[in-house]
Length: 115
Image (cartoon, rainbow, N blue to C red; front, side):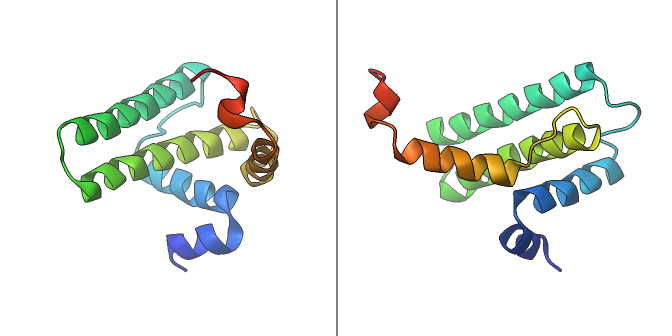
């Protein structure tokens, strides 16, 4: 089964598990799962967001922008799966995301903020 099939048929929880296994196989999670290691991984998510901004700022084109966005998603889902495996978080991303989307539907413009 292709990764895209897993995502569309089983959701983000299943996709994150596949991505995390791949990251472990490639050596991105050697050793223990410590808060420091998770913090470093979240910093890498931040760096990927910056790469999206740079691709836009430097007019690198649609494909590069979307590729960098994909890196953000991959890294974030990897961290989520690692934390879930270690029972640092117990909630399903699929369930919480659906609830959040529904909550946001009823919120006012800009969620009541000025910008």
